Length: 96
Image 1 (cartoon, rainbow, N blue to C red):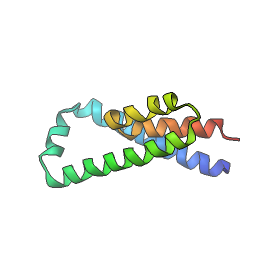
Image 2: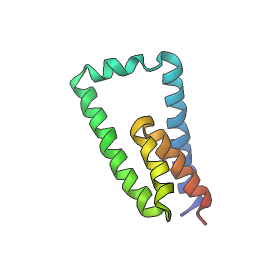
Image 3: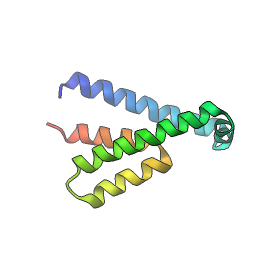
């Protein structure tokens, strides 16, 4: 994997984490109720869950210990893809 690819993905992941922190500090979890009240909010939530399933498959395929894979995968379903971004960044740092 090239340095440019690592830098781009790392930047996107860190930007996403920053947006999550910004949204939480601005309105907390209150905004989530409004998302669930809208049909497109439910579609978005289903999209996130489908992504969590796909990312969990990638994690279980990539990690050698199923307990480590479970420790990374389970939080994705509660905390979202912030966890996925952290996992990807750490994997990139280990890649040669």
